[in-house]
Image 1 (cartoon, rainbow, N blue to C red):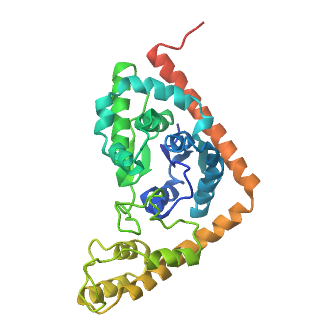
Image 2: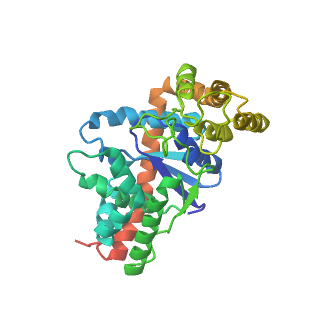
Image 3: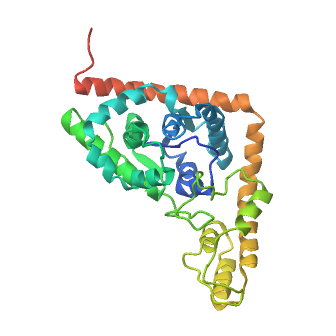
Length: 333
């Protein structure tokens, strides 16, 4: 291994949104020249809560790849890997299941929150319950040193680190203990003021959204519920519109001026949102245009996915040979 390695990825449950960008995509683009990077399109994990409609996954894999390309990830530097096409990941997941207790999974705050969000009315699928173990296998089979993630994924990385330590202590020092790299924004709230953007809730602004759609979503954003009239003093802290201004509006003087006027009751929500829409649309326009361009070359995009998966599987096969040897199950039969 000549350079340190990054492994991160996304579940293909649909196109990616601004929360993905600030949480991880931005760091992936920034580090692609410095690290050997593998991006896992985690379709097996997507099945954990989409098992009734697996036919959606193929189109969603393509959508995620388009978003990767549109934000500036270079397929000459970064490998896109489809999880289900690397069967070694399943093997390592099964081995890891013996290193994790049920109590450990039950304490995982990210898992608990996602179970609550999904509201499994027919019972909790075992696949969903154990997906932190699958995620640990994803990270460690690539011997990733660094994992760019959003704040909500920190418990997952810590679980991976615990598994690596236990494996290396029991068998041999084969696996790399990964470190998390947080995005510049701890958590981008949803447009409804919720804890974070979520596709299932529908409070997202997607990277490929049209100008009209972005404007509609911005103008319907949650603001300060205590502010009845535009002349009432308003709260900036905890106000999603200003959180987005801080992240996406490059004119910091304008942002501070708006905040000052908002606190004094000298500007209405409409103007603040209009300024935010302008900043967001300027940010998203080049991404949107690149995405449309890449979408017109579907065979080229598919070749990128196939080649990236081939290279990723080669890494996984090498790691699994070491894992089997360390566990003394590399049978000579």
